[in-house]
Every structure is written in C-alpha cells, then in structure tokens.
Length: 361
Ligand code: ADP
Ligand code: MG
Image (cartoon, protein in one colour):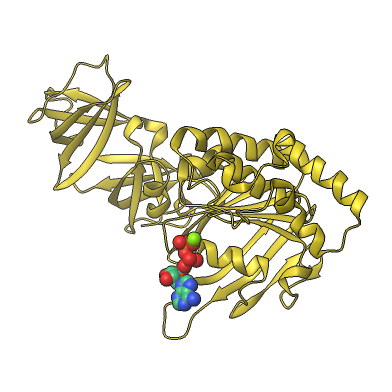
C-alpha cells in the first residue's frame, strides 16, 4: 500500500507523436484512481510505465518516497490484471493464483493460507481445483484479480479488465472489483475507455486525450465542471457552444453566443472562467438535460436560442432531440411528459441558469 506519484512522465517512440506527454498526477494511498480516455490516448502506456514494463522517455515514478523509475518490474511490488487475463489455461485456479508466490519463494504453509484468503476475497473458494479452461469469463476475471491480490501488492494495476465480459456481468463485476479493492485497502490504478465504468468505480478520474492530461477530479466534478470541451463531450453528452466574453463581475462571466443570446456562467477559481476577460473567444458547455424546450415560441422567447427540430427519438424515460441551431446540432433531452416536439418544429431552448459551464475550447 502506497501512494504513486507520476512526475512529468513522457513516452515517445522514435518517429511518432508522444504517446504520453508530461503527465503529472498523484494517486493517494488506498485510492481507486482511473485513467480514462479514447483508444490510443496513452492509458496502457502509462500503466506499463508504472509497472516497469516500459521505461519513460523523461520524468520519474515514485511509490511513496521511493523513486522506482529504474527499478525492475518484479521489484516494484505491483499486481497487474490484463484485458485478456493472461492465465495458464491448463492449470488449476490455485496453480494460477500461486504463480506470483512461487516466483517470490513464499513457503508452503504461508502460500496455502494466502491463496485461500485471495480466493475468498473474490468469492472463488469452491473452485480452487477447477481448470481455467473450465471456467466462465467472469470467473476467469476473478482468478486474474485473485492472482494480482495474493502478492499483496503496493499498487494494483488493471488494464481494461472488464472488456471481455458481456454488459450485465460487466456491471456486476465492476461493483465487486471496487468493493474488493476497498476492503483490501490497496492503491488501485485502473484503465478504461468506458466513461460509465470510470464514473461508477473511481474515487478520482484522470481524463486523457492524445497523450495529454485534460482533467483530474472526482466523477461528479468531471461531469458537472468539465475543464475542457473534450472532457465535456467525452463524459456523457454535451453541447459545446462557442461564445464571446462580454464581461466579468465578481461571481460570474457573461458571454454572447453566435445568435446574440446572452448567458451567464459561474466564475470559479482554478478554471478557465477565472482567466478570461471581455472580448475573449471562449466556449460554454450545456448538458442535454439542462436545457428546457418551448415549442413554437412566442415573441418573448424568439431570438433566445431558437432552432428547428431535426430528429426526435423516444428512448423510454426521455425524448432526445437534435436541434439545428446556427448550423450546429444541439442535443436536448426532455422527459416524455413534456409536450412532444416533432421534426420541423421551431423550438426555443432555455438553458437552466445555474447549469451553464465555461470550458476551454
Ligand atoms: P490506449 O491504451 O489508451 O488505447 P496506448 O497507450 O496503447 O493507448 O497507445 C498510445 C499511443 O502510443 C498510440 O498512438 C499507439 O499507437 C502508440 N504506441 C503504443 N505502443 C507503441 C510502440 N511500441 N511503438 C510505437 N507506438 C506505440
Ligand atoms: Mg490500452
């Protein structure tokens, strides 16, 4: 159990753009920390640098107060779970879980005790003698987790460990992994491209795109206060609208949209909203659920973000509308009880006053 400090690490392969650029984050002791981003953004590269399989081009890696940048992988005390589990298919569950202990020369009695404990942690006590190729995907996933936990790692590293499971099992397993990790108190660095998974499991999330860090924050903060346009669109769905800053007063920033609609966004220290001034080009994020619709708006609403419905989709709890506004598509979700709009209808969109959020373009 340890904190993990990534101190400006970069990885660049010859002749390629950097896979990871100057990444600095601290993962607290016992924290469930997730690297989230689209395929190719540098998640696995980062995880492998922490494990020691890949050497950073620059920067350093610290476990607690120990610099491990030049420490061999087997001396770093990390447990790793891979996407394909990397189990020995013809060996038993116990044989697989024993592997890391054998490598470390743990004695017979201690080994049996620790294997039993690890199998209990993941709920596989009954299946210790079963061969891996006789297990379901979900059970194999748990063996991989037990094998990583049995060495009592300082840090548990998981690279998209749920991507081979079907949707329902994935949701169950993510809850199990989270509670197993919390019970063990192990520091956990988790990698996924699935934002819902990251939100459900993590204490904090680091959002990456093209090797660059966009934001590190709790799931609630990355959703409600995305730092950049990329984060706003990648986490859930959002409309990012370009705007011009009109002025700044103590607690808020006034902006003008392309159709002259004026909105106010909160001014929050440490975000782009605290750094802009009148005349700057900026962007605001509006969540689909934070916009109210009025069909066939009267004169008092006209000119306020008016557009035409392009598509209307019934999804059960809500209707999803795509609305053409100034040549841009705005997505709005409205409860089905709302007077339904049809394609071609003229609508006015009223963003909820306290849900307008300024993002870095
Ligand atoms: P992710 O896990 O987020 O999908 P990766 O960390 O695997 O992304 O890859 C990040 C980037 O680094 C990608 O553009 C990938 O093509 C590149 N990359 C990864 N490994 C190598 C390598 N051995 N040689 C060259 N480029 C690589
Ligand atoms: Mg990957």
